[in-house]
Length: 287
Length: 347
Image (tube, rainbow over the protein chains, first blue to last red):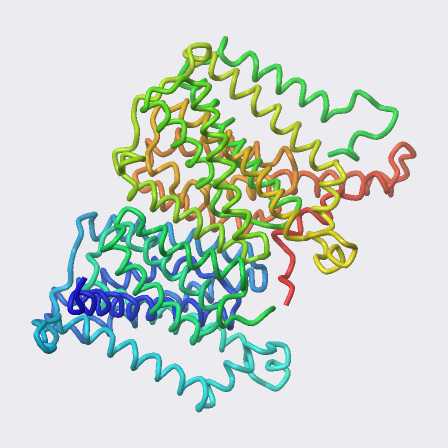
């Protein structure tokens, strides 16, 4: 295997990892604050992807599609949190089961509305085509995806560390009762975070539609990868989500080339190792 | 359930009801059309899987959303052996080996987790099995699955197979009851109540969780073998996330931690799935709404609700001065068991 081929596969892995980060960061943020394992996150992704496709098909504007998807999915997340999840706040199992129910409904309605055929996003002209890197060329869209993920990661970091909202969220993660006692409306913070996480999933859906064809079942697949990423990185840790995404993205890309039949297994193996030796994940905190 | 049968009274209402139900179950193939016999057999198989999930959920508050993966592994083992021309005994032996191996993987990866982390790990494991059933197409037949896996000649007819399922279900439920009442069951509940206490008493929390997972896995694997014999076919759908999720919802609908609840839940869900889904076009939507409704309105399940009701009735009777009922017998024994759905997580 020569260097250039290796580089191409590494870039494939990195770009897939970038997409995984967009999904996993929302998932892990929701868990970190609300302690909800949101199994509807994959369905949010799927819905965002279809909404993005429909909007782009109607208006021809990619950016508009991204905004509509993120906004609508976020609104959906907000109303679901207000109407359903709020009723079982603090009860782990009912929360998970509720999100499973929500996931079934959303995925099935997507199938009813958008059909079962795989659909792909037509990449915007600014991001289509390929870039020359020395002697090889690489799709511009995938490189753009990596850039977007890095920008989001930096933005999340700055938001968490250097803004008042970030401080409120960190206080809520550490001790929600105390945060509430200090006069923070923790309920509203929870709802906001859930909506924000949903927006990230919807956003990732539109971006991901240019990478993976959208079809029924993508929701489950992307959810599995997000789960593995956050289990490896540590639930609730954005840093862990970043490291886990890159790791899983690369492993997935390499294994698809070298051992295609076992590509699921190779993703699972590092997860098993982490669980056996460090059950809370690489950057997780013990409860 | 145990305390409902007060000492000195051999004939109690629940016992009579149980015997009548069993007699009815035995009579079914003589009365109903074979289509319904087949669906009842499916319900028994689902009950087996639900019972295996319930063992971990009830005894240890470890809710697995990946048990269909274990069942499907056993089913694929039977299918693979059958396709390679091995006899039924070899098929069963291979199914046992695969079940033990897969359960061991589940056990090792999940034994140091609890609560929501356990749930996520089993979920991911189940999805990995599902992925493997697709990708390892040389072994699993990929999306097409493995057709033409015949039942052993003794249970070739559906009514014969029905009795096999019934017998296996009864035996498995009894075996799980024995485990529950054994010292080992006590250790499991000790771990559920306080892991740190049990480990400072010298018990290995992880090892006991591992053994519990193996036991539960064997029951799930048995369900897998029966299901492949029922359909005479196995496909990736058997390892689907939906199947694992349904097993959990059966347990919740019926009542976590009760032996009867998961069986009732399995009957209801299987019945709804096969009798309703042909008439309702958007079946997954209905299912999702049922999930939501159950969680919001019946978190303790049917058996839990019935117990609450019975307990309340008995207490009000005791208050009105009926000497035959003392309140101590009337306290709902589910006080610790039903808290899996209602307790706040430990933080």
